[in-house]
Amino acid sequence: MKSISLTITHLIFSRFFQSILIVMLGLPVCASIHASESFSIRPHETPDACNQEAVQIRVTVNNVGSGGVLNVELYDDPENFLFKKGRKRKIRIPAAAGQQKVCMNLDQPGTYAVAVYHDRDGDRKLKKRWNLLPREPFGLSNNPENPDGFPQFSDSAFTTGRLGADIVIDLKQP
Image: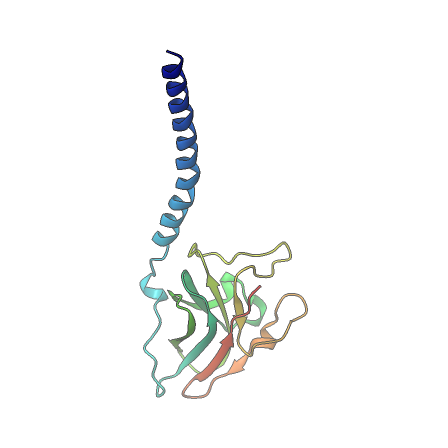
C-alpha cells in the first residue's frame, strides 16, 4: 500500500513539474511563433530591383547575421534623422548571414542618409539601451566611427547623382 501511495505521489509530483516545464518551455515557443508571424513583409517594404541605370540607392550591407529581418531605412530630413516621421522609406528583407544588397528607387537625386539594423527577433522594433543606443546590430551610411551621442544626419549624409549612389554599410555589433 505504501508503494502505491509513493507511486501516486511521485506521479502527481512529476506531472506538476512536467506542467511547469511545459509552461516554461512553451513561452519561448510561443514567442518564436509570434516573431516568425511578424516576419511578414508588407508590399511597400519590399526592395526594388537593382538597376545601375536607375535613380536609386544601392546599399550593400556587411556583417549581417542569420535569422530575423534586415531593415534598411532612408532619410532626407536632417531635423528628423532616425525618427519615424523623418523616414522616407523602409525596406525589410529576411536576414541571411554575410553580405546582403538592397536597392530602393528615388523620386529624384538629392542628399540622403541610410540607417540599417538587424532585427534579430523580427518584432519590427530596434532594441535600445537606456541611453537610446542600439542593442541590435546597427549601421549608418558613411560608417561613422563612434559618433558622440546621438548620430547626426551630417555624419551619414551623401549626395546622389542622376544614377543614384552605391553605398556600403558595415553593421556593428552592440
